[in-house]
Length: 442
Image (cartoon, rainbow, N blue to C red; front, side):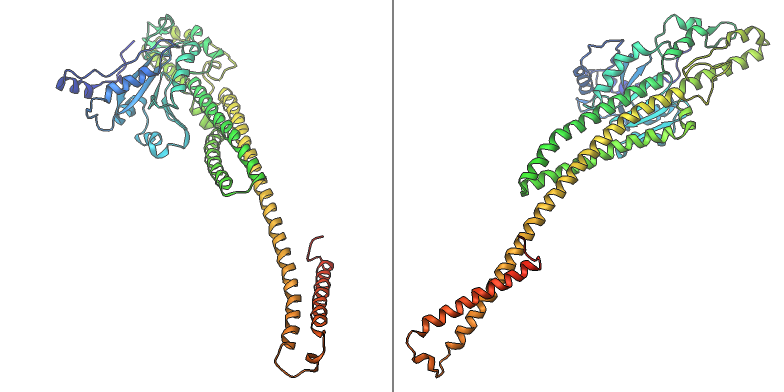
Protein backbone atom coordinates (compact mmCIF):
# COMPACT_ATOMS: atom_id res chain seq x y z
CA UNK A 1 0.00 0.00 0.00
CA UNK A 2 1.53 3.27 -1.11
CA UNK A 3 1.33 6.53 0.70
CA UNK A 4 -1.36 8.88 -0.42
CA UNK A 5 0.33 11.59 -2.48
CA UNK A 6 -2.43 14.07 -1.70
CA UNK A 7 -2.21 14.00 2.07
CA UNK A 8 -2.76 17.27 3.89
CA UNK A 9 0.41 19.27 4.58
CA UNK A 10 0.17 22.05 7.14
CA UNK A 11 3.13 24.04 5.83
CA UNK A 12 1.58 27.38 6.77
CA UNK A 13 0.94 26.18 10.32
CA UNK A 14 4.53 24.98 10.63
CA UNK A 15 5.87 28.33 9.58
CA UNK A 16 3.76 29.97 12.27
CA UNK A 17 5.10 27.58 14.87
CA UNK A 18 8.69 28.43 13.95
CA UNK A 19 8.02 32.14 14.29
CA UNK A 20 6.26 31.80 17.63
CA UNK A 21 7.10 28.60 19.51
CA UNK A 22 4.55 29.43 22.17
CA UNK A 23 1.61 29.26 19.77
CA UNK A 24 -0.36 26.01 20.05
CA UNK A 25 -0.14 23.52 17.18
CA UNK A 26 -3.01 23.07 14.78
CA UNK A 27 -5.50 20.76 16.44
CA UNK A 28 -6.08 17.34 15.01
CA UNK A 29 -8.99 15.31 16.28
CA UNK A 30 -8.98 11.61 15.52
CA UNK A 31 -12.09 9.80 16.53
CA UNK A 32 -12.54 6.09 15.94
CA UNK A 33 -16.15 5.13 16.68
CA UNK A 34 -16.36 7.44 19.68
CA UNK A 35 -20.07 8.18 19.94
CA UNK A 36 -19.76 10.04 23.26
CA UNK A 37 -17.35 12.75 22.08
CA UNK A 38 -18.32 16.29 23.05
CA UNK A 39 -18.80 18.95 20.38
CA UNK A 40 -17.35 21.56 22.72
CA UNK A 41 -13.92 20.06 22.14
CA UNK A 42 -14.22 20.98 18.45
CA UNK A 43 -15.15 24.54 19.32
CA UNK A 44 -12.20 24.75 21.71
CA UNK A 45 -9.90 23.36 19.04
CA UNK A 46 -11.06 25.94 16.53
CA UNK A 47 -10.60 28.69 19.11
CA UNK A 48 -7.05 27.47 19.76
CA UNK A 49 -6.36 27.55 16.04
CA UNK A 50 -7.35 31.15 15.43
CA UNK A 51 -7.79 32.68 18.85
CA UNK A 52 -4.26 34.11 19.14
CA UNK A 53 -4.81 36.70 16.47
CA UNK A 54 -2.50 34.98 13.97
CA UNK A 55 -2.89 35.61 10.29
CA UNK A 56 -4.19 32.60 8.45
CA UNK A 57 -2.95 31.44 5.12
CA UNK A 58 -4.73 33.31 2.37
CA UNK A 59 -7.90 31.45 1.37
CA UNK A 60 -7.47 28.71 4.00
CA UNK A 61 -10.69 27.46 5.55
CA UNK A 62 -11.53 24.96 8.25
CA UNK A 63 -12.44 21.46 7.04
CA UNK A 64 -13.14 18.18 8.78
CA UNK A 65 -12.07 14.95 7.14
CA UNK A 66 -13.91 11.67 7.71
CA UNK A 67 -12.67 8.35 6.35
CA UNK A 68 -14.59 5.12 5.90
CA UNK A 69 -13.97 3.97 9.45
CA UNK A 70 -15.47 7.14 10.93
CA UNK A 71 -12.15 8.65 12.00
CA UNK A 72 -12.20 12.45 11.89
CA UNK A 73 -9.56 15.14 11.65
CA UNK A 74 -9.76 18.94 11.71
CA UNK A 75 -7.55 20.62 9.12
CA UNK A 76 -7.11 23.99 7.45
CA UNK A 77 -6.76 23.85 3.68
CA UNK A 78 -6.79 26.33 0.87
CA UNK A 79 -8.62 25.89 -2.42
CA UNK A 80 -5.67 24.49 -4.32
CA UNK A 81 -5.16 21.71 -1.78
CA UNK A 82 -8.81 20.70 -1.94
CA UNK A 83 -8.77 20.79 -5.75
CA UNK A 84 -5.70 18.54 -5.92
CA UNK A 85 -7.01 16.12 -3.34
CA UNK A 86 -10.60 15.73 -4.58
CA UNK A 87 -9.83 16.10 -8.33
CA UNK A 88 -12.60 18.67 -8.84
CA UNK A 89 -12.58 21.92 -10.85
CA UNK A 90 -11.87 25.04 -8.85
CA UNK A 91 -15.19 26.54 -9.93
CA UNK A 92 -17.03 23.83 -7.99
CA UNK A 93 -15.75 25.32 -4.75
CA UNK A 94 -17.79 28.45 -5.48
CA UNK A 95 -20.91 26.36 -4.89
CA UNK A 96 -19.71 25.81 -1.34
CA UNK A 97 -19.09 29.52 -0.81
CA UNK A 98 -21.26 32.05 0.99
CA UNK A 99 -22.87 33.25 -2.25
CA UNK A 100 -24.78 29.96 -2.52
CA UNK A 101 -25.41 29.63 1.21
CA UNK A 102 -29.09 28.68 0.80
CA UNK A 103 -28.88 26.86 -2.51
CA UNK A 104 -29.00 23.08 -2.96
CA UNK A 105 -26.79 21.26 -5.42
CA UNK A 106 -25.48 17.71 -5.82
CA UNK A 107 -22.80 17.61 -8.52
CA UNK A 108 -21.06 14.49 -9.79
CA UNK A 109 -17.44 14.69 -10.92
CA UNK A 110 -14.98 12.04 -12.05
CA UNK A 111 -13.74 11.10 -8.57
CA UNK A 112 -15.86 13.19 -6.21
CA UNK A 113 -19.35 14.38 -5.41
CA UNK A 114 -19.94 18.02 -4.44
CA UNK A 115 -22.80 18.23 -1.95
CA UNK A 116 -24.37 21.57 -1.04
CA UNK A 117 -27.58 20.95 0.87
CA UNK A 118 -28.64 23.89 3.00
CA UNK A 119 -25.94 24.19 5.67
CA UNK A 120 -24.13 20.95 4.72
CA UNK A 121 -21.27 21.70 2.35
CA UNK A 122 -19.08 18.71 1.67
CA UNK A 123 -16.92 16.99 -0.93
CA UNK A 124 -17.43 13.22 -0.96
CA UNK A 125 -15.08 10.75 -2.62
CA UNK A 126 -15.02 6.96 -2.60
CA UNK A 127 -12.59 7.07 0.32
CA UNK A 128 -13.36 10.10 2.48
CA UNK A 129 -15.56 13.10 3.23
CA UNK A 130 -14.32 16.70 3.42
CA UNK A 131 -16.80 18.78 5.39
CA UNK A 132 -16.62 22.58 5.28
CA UNK A 133 -17.22 24.66 8.43
CA UNK A 134 -17.87 21.67 10.71
CA UNK A 135 -18.21 23.81 13.85
CA UNK A 136 -21.40 25.58 12.83
CA UNK A 137 -24.31 24.89 15.13
CA UNK A 138 -26.44 23.46 12.31
CA UNK A 139 -23.64 21.18 11.06
CA UNK A 140 -22.86 19.55 14.41
CA UNK A 141 -25.75 17.01 14.14
CA UNK A 142 -24.36 15.92 10.76
CA UNK A 143 -20.91 15.46 12.31
CA UNK A 144 -22.41 13.35 15.10
CA UNK A 145 -24.31 11.18 12.64
CA UNK A 146 -21.18 10.57 10.58
CA UNK A 147 -19.30 9.48 13.69
CA UNK A 148 -22.07 7.17 14.81
CA UNK A 149 -23.07 5.56 11.53
CA UNK A 150 -19.96 5.32 9.37
CA UNK A 151 -18.12 2.77 11.53
CA UNK A 152 -21.19 0.51 11.56
CA UNK A 153 -22.16 0.90 7.92
CA UNK A 154 -18.82 0.61 6.10
CA UNK A 155 -18.44 -3.06 5.13
CA UNK A 156 -14.85 -2.88 3.89
CA UNK A 157 -11.98 -0.47 3.34
CA UNK A 158 -10.56 0.92 0.11
CA UNK A 159 -6.77 1.22 -0.14
CA UNK A 160 -5.50 4.66 0.56
CA UNK A 161 -8.38 5.57 2.88
CA UNK A 162 -6.42 5.32 6.13
CA UNK A 163 -6.43 2.46 8.67
CA UNK A 164 -7.54 -0.86 7.23
CA UNK A 165 -8.64 -4.20 8.46
CA UNK A 166 -7.46 -7.64 7.38
CA UNK A 167 -9.49 -7.54 4.16
CA UNK A 168 -6.91 -5.24 2.59
CA UNK A 169 -4.37 -7.99 2.34
CA UNK A 170 -6.92 -10.26 0.70
CA UNK A 171 -7.65 -7.65 -1.96
CA UNK A 172 -4.06 -7.25 -3.15
CA UNK A 173 -2.78 -9.40 -5.97
CA UNK A 174 0.85 -10.06 -5.13
CA UNK A 175 1.73 -11.16 -8.65
CA UNK A 176 0.70 -8.06 -10.55
CA UNK A 177 0.76 -5.71 -7.50
CA UNK A 178 -2.62 -4.29 -8.47
CA UNK A 179 -5.70 -3.96 -6.27
CA UNK A 180 -8.46 -6.37 -7.25
CA UNK A 181 -11.90 -6.76 -5.65
CA UNK A 182 -12.38 -10.27 -4.37
CA UNK A 183 -15.74 -11.89 -3.55
CA UNK A 184 -15.25 -11.58 0.21
CA UNK A 185 -14.73 -7.83 -0.06
CA UNK A 186 -17.45 -7.17 -2.57
CA UNK A 187 -20.08 -9.20 -0.75
CA UNK A 188 -20.27 -6.39 1.78
CA UNK A 189 -21.61 -4.13 -0.92
CA UNK A 190 -24.53 -6.46 -1.46
CA UNK A 191 -26.09 -5.50 1.85
CA UNK A 192 -24.79 -1.95 2.21
CA UNK A 193 -24.84 1.16 0.10
CA UNK A 194 -21.54 2.48 -1.28
CA UNK A 195 -19.68 4.84 0.99
CA UNK A 196 -20.64 7.97 -0.93
CA UNK A 197 -24.34 7.07 -0.74
CA UNK A 198 -24.09 6.43 2.97
CA UNK A 199 -22.80 9.97 3.40
CA UNK A 200 -25.46 11.33 1.05
CA UNK A 201 -28.17 9.48 2.97
CA UNK A 202 -26.96 10.91 6.28
CA UNK A 203 -26.85 14.41 4.78
CA UNK A 204 -30.37 14.12 3.39
CA UNK A 205 -31.63 12.73 6.69
CA UNK A 206 -30.13 15.61 8.68
CA UNK A 207 -31.44 18.23 6.24
CA UNK A 208 -34.94 16.72 6.10
CA UNK A 209 -35.07 16.47 9.89
CA UNK A 210 -33.96 20.10 10.18
CA UNK A 211 -36.59 21.29 7.71
CA UNK A 212 -39.29 19.21 9.40
CA UNK A 213 -38.46 20.80 12.74
CA UNK A 214 -38.66 24.24 11.16
CA UNK A 215 -42.06 23.43 9.69
CA UNK A 216 -43.28 22.09 13.04
CA UNK A 217 -42.19 25.32 14.74
CA UNK A 218 -43.94 27.31 12.04
CA UNK A 219 -47.17 25.37 12.54
CA UNK A 220 -47.08 25.84 16.30
CA UNK A 221 -46.62 29.56 15.80
CA UNK A 222 -49.03 30.04 12.91
CA UNK A 223 -52.35 28.58 14.06
CA UNK A 224 -52.72 30.55 17.32
CA UNK A 225 -51.80 33.79 15.57
CA UNK A 226 -54.29 33.17 12.76
CA UNK A 227 -57.08 32.26 15.17
CA UNK A 228 -56.45 35.43 17.13
CA UNK A 229 -56.58 37.48 13.92
CA UNK A 230 -59.92 35.89 13.00
CA UNK A 231 -61.31 36.95 16.40
CA UNK A 232 -59.79 40.41 16.52
CA UNK A 233 -58.59 42.28 13.45
CA UNK A 234 -55.97 44.65 14.80
CA UNK A 235 -52.74 46.21 13.61
CA UNK A 236 -50.69 44.02 15.95
CA UNK A 237 -52.25 40.80 14.71
CA UNK A 238 -51.89 41.86 11.10
CA UNK A 239 -48.19 42.55 11.67
CA UNK A 240 -47.71 39.09 13.20
CA UNK A 241 -49.39 37.46 10.21
CA UNK A 242 -47.21 39.47 7.81
CA UNK A 243 -44.07 38.26 9.57
CA UNK A 244 -45.43 34.73 9.57
CA UNK A 245 -46.03 34.81 5.82
CA UNK A 246 -42.48 36.04 5.22
CA UNK A 247 -41.01 33.16 7.24
CA UNK A 248 -43.27 30.71 5.45
CA UNK A 249 -42.21 31.94 2.02
CA UNK A 250 -38.52 31.64 2.86
CA UNK A 251 -38.95 28.17 4.33
CA UNK A 252 -40.98 27.00 1.34
CA UNK A 253 -38.25 28.22 -1.01
CA UNK A 254 -35.60 26.27 0.92
CA UNK A 255 -37.62 23.06 0.89
CA UNK A 256 -38.43 23.55 -2.78
CA UNK A 257 -34.75 23.90 -3.71
CA UNK A 258 -33.78 20.61 -2.07
CA UNK A 259 -36.82 18.88 -3.55
CA UNK A 260 -36.11 20.21 -7.05
CA UNK A 261 -32.49 19.06 -6.88
CA UNK A 262 -33.53 15.52 -5.95
CA UNK A 263 -36.20 15.56 -8.63
CA UNK A 264 -33.62 16.66 -11.18
CA UNK A 265 -31.42 13.69 -10.29
CA UNK A 266 -34.34 11.28 -10.43
CA UNK A 267 -35.24 12.48 -13.91
CA UNK A 268 -31.75 11.77 -15.29
CA UNK A 269 -30.33 8.26 -14.94
CA UNK A 270 -27.03 9.37 -16.40
CA UNK A 271 -26.50 11.91 -13.61
CA UNK A 272 -27.33 9.25 -11.04
CA UNK A 273 -24.88 6.81 -12.62
CA UNK A 274 -22.11 9.41 -12.35
CA UNK A 275 -22.64 9.53 -8.59
CA UNK A 276 -21.46 5.91 -8.18
CA UNK A 277 -17.91 6.77 -7.16
CA UNK A 278 -17.12 3.38 -5.64
CA UNK A 279 -18.27 1.64 -8.80
CA UNK A 280 -16.02 3.82 -10.91
CA UNK A 281 -13.13 3.22 -8.52
CA UNK A 282 -13.54 -0.57 -8.79
CA UNK A 283 -13.74 -0.35 -12.58
CA UNK A 284 -10.54 1.66 -12.68
CA UNK A 285 -8.80 -0.90 -10.48
CA UNK A 286 -9.99 -3.72 -12.71
CA UNK A 287 -8.80 -1.93 -15.83
CA UNK A 288 -5.38 -1.27 -14.34
CA UNK A 289 -5.14 -4.88 -13.21
CA UNK A 290 -6.04 -6.23 -16.65
CA UNK A 291 -3.60 -3.89 -18.39
CA UNK A 292 -0.82 -4.87 -16.02
CA UNK A 293 -1.63 -8.54 -16.46
CA UNK A 294 -1.58 -8.23 -20.24
CA UNK A 295 1.80 -6.56 -20.15
CA UNK A 296 3.30 -9.37 -18.06
CA UNK A 297 1.67 -12.16 -20.13
CA UNK A 298 -0.14 -13.42 -17.04
CA UNK A 299 -3.72 -12.88 -18.07
CA UNK A 300 -4.55 -16.55 -17.56
CA UNK A 301 -3.54 -16.47 -13.90
CA UNK A 302 -5.30 -13.22 -13.07
CA UNK A 303 -8.61 -13.91 -14.78
CA UNK A 304 -9.91 -16.16 -11.96
CA UNK A 305 -9.59 -13.22 -9.58
CA UNK A 306 -12.47 -11.49 -11.44
CA UNK A 307 -15.39 -13.69 -10.40
CA UNK A 308 -18.93 -13.56 -11.63
CA UNK A 309 -20.92 -11.92 -8.85
CA UNK A 310 -24.56 -10.94 -8.98
CA UNK A 311 -26.17 -8.62 -6.49
CA UNK A 312 -29.36 -6.81 -5.74
CA UNK A 313 -27.34 -3.72 -4.92
CA UNK A 314 -26.28 -1.45 -7.71
CA UNK A 315 -22.92 -0.88 -6.02
CA UNK A 316 -21.91 -4.53 -6.55
CA UNK A 317 -20.53 -6.40 -9.52
CA UNK A 318 -22.73 -7.74 -12.26
CA UNK A 319 -21.28 -10.62 -14.25
CA UNK A 320 -17.63 -9.81 -15.05
CA UNK A 321 -18.09 -6.05 -14.87
CA UNK A 322 -20.16 -3.37 -13.12
CA UNK A 323 -23.43 -2.36 -14.69
CA UNK A 324 -23.16 1.37 -15.32
CA UNK A 325 -26.86 1.64 -16.03
CA UNK A 326 -28.03 0.16 -12.73
CA UNK A 327 -29.11 3.06 -10.53
CA UNK A 328 -31.82 1.29 -8.57
CA UNK A 329 -30.24 1.81 -5.16
CA UNK A 330 -29.69 5.52 -5.58
CA UNK A 331 -33.11 5.93 -7.13
CA UNK A 332 -34.79 4.24 -4.14
CA UNK A 333 -32.74 6.36 -1.75
CA UNK A 334 -33.60 9.62 -3.48
CA UNK A 335 -37.27 8.69 -3.88
CA UNK A 336 -37.61 8.09 -0.15
CA UNK A 337 -36.29 11.53 0.74
CA UNK A 338 -38.13 13.09 -2.18
CA UNK A 339 -41.39 11.81 -0.71
CA UNK A 340 -40.40 13.10 2.73
CA UNK A 341 -39.59 16.53 1.33
CA UNK A 342 -42.82 16.47 -0.63
CA UNK A 343 -44.70 15.82 2.60
CA UNK A 344 -42.84 18.70 4.27
CA UNK A 345 -43.73 20.92 1.35
CA UNK A 346 -47.39 19.90 1.63
CA UNK A 347 -47.37 20.87 5.31
CA UNK A 348 -46.09 24.32 4.40
CA UNK A 349 -48.69 24.64 1.66
CA UNK A 350 -51.43 23.65 4.11
CA UNK A 351 -50.28 26.40 6.48
CA UNK A 352 -50.28 28.84 3.59
CA UNK A 353 -53.80 27.76 2.61
CA UNK A 354 -54.89 28.29 6.21
CA UNK A 355 -53.38 31.77 6.07
CA UNK A 356 -55.19 32.48 2.81
CA UNK A 357 -58.47 31.23 4.27
CA UNK A 358 -58.01 33.41 7.32
CA UNK A 359 -57.26 36.41 5.12
CA UNK A 360 -60.38 35.72 3.09
CA UNK A 361 -62.41 35.49 6.28
CA UNK A 362 -60.95 38.76 7.54
CA UNK A 363 -61.67 40.42 4.20
CA UNK A 364 -65.26 39.20 4.36
CA UNK A 365 -65.56 40.68 7.84
CA UNK A 366 -64.13 43.98 6.66
CA UNK A 367 -66.42 44.01 3.62
CA UNK A 368 -69.41 43.36 5.85
CA UNK A 369 -68.44 46.23 8.14
CA UNK A 370 -67.90 48.41 5.10
CA UNK A 371 -71.39 47.55 3.82
CA UNK A 372 -72.90 48.39 7.19
CA UNK A 373 -71.18 51.75 7.11
CA UNK A 374 -72.53 52.39 3.62
CA UNK A 375 -76.06 51.53 4.76
CA UNK A 376 -75.76 53.83 7.75
CA UNK A 377 -74.53 56.57 5.47
CA UNK A 378 -77.54 56.04 3.17
CA UNK A 379 -80.00 56.26 6.09
CA UNK A 380 -78.37 59.47 7.33
CA UNK A 381 -78.54 60.88 3.81
CA UNK A 382 -82.28 60.16 3.61
CA UNK A 383 -82.83 61.78 7.02
CA UNK A 384 -80.81 64.80 5.92
CA UNK A 385 -82.98 65.12 2.82
CA UNK A 386 -86.17 65.08 4.88
CA UNK A 387 -84.81 67.65 7.33
CA UNK A 388 -83.65 69.82 4.44
CA UNK A 389 -87.21 69.92 3.06
CA UNK A 390 -88.54 71.01 6.45
CA UNK A 391 -85.80 73.61 6.72
CA UNK A 392 -86.72 74.92 3.25
CA UNK A 393 -90.34 75.42 4.20
CA UNK A 394 -89.38 77.07 7.48
CA UNK A 395 -87.00 79.36 5.66
CA UNK A 396 -89.64 80.38 3.14
CA UNK A 397 -92.13 81.37 5.79
CA UNK A 398 -89.46 82.96 7.90
CA UNK A 399 -88.86 85.73 5.39
CA UNK A 400 -89.74 89.24 6.51
CA UNK A 401 -92.60 89.73 4.04
CA UNK A 402 -96.27 90.66 4.61
CA UNK A 403 -98.43 87.50 5.13
CA UNK A 404 -101.96 87.09 6.56
CA UNK A 405 -100.94 83.92 8.39
CA UNK A 406 -98.78 85.96 10.74
CA UNK A 407 -101.92 87.63 12.14
CA UNK A 408 -103.68 84.39 13.12
CA UNK A 409 -103.41 83.15 16.65
CA UNK A 410 -101.91 79.64 17.25
CA UNK A 411 -100.76 79.19 13.66
CA UNK A 412 -97.12 78.73 14.63
CA UNK A 413 -97.60 75.42 16.49
CA UNK A 414 -99.75 74.00 13.77
CA UNK A 415 -97.37 75.03 11.03
CA UNK A 416 -94.27 73.59 12.73
CA UNK A 417 -96.06 70.35 13.60
CA UNK A 418 -97.35 70.02 10.06
CA UNK A 419 -94.02 70.44 8.28
CA UNK A 420 -92.29 68.16 10.83
CA UNK A 421 -94.84 65.42 10.22
CA UNK A 422 -94.42 65.90 6.51
CA UNK A 423 -90.64 65.52 6.80
CA UNK A 424 -90.97 62.31 8.83
CA UNK A 425 -93.44 60.95 6.26
CA UNK A 426 -91.04 61.83 3.46
CA UNK A 427 -88.20 60.06 5.31
CA UNK A 428 -90.24 56.91 5.73
CA UNK A 429 -91.32 56.93 2.09
CA UNK A 430 -87.72 57.23 0.80
CA UNK A 431 -86.49 54.62 3.33
CA UNK A 432 -89.18 52.18 2.23
CA UNK A 433 -88.23 52.73 -1.39
CA UNK A 434 -84.57 51.97 -0.59
CA UNK A 435 -85.53 48.76 1.16
CA UNK A 436 -87.81 47.80 -1.74
CA UNK A 437 -84.88 48.23 -4.10
CA UNK A 438 -82.71 46.18 -1.66
CA UNK A 439 -80.34 49.07 -1.14
CA UNK A 440 -80.59 48.45 2.58
CA UNK A 441 -80.43 45.19 4.52
CA UNK A 442 -83.36 43.83 6.40
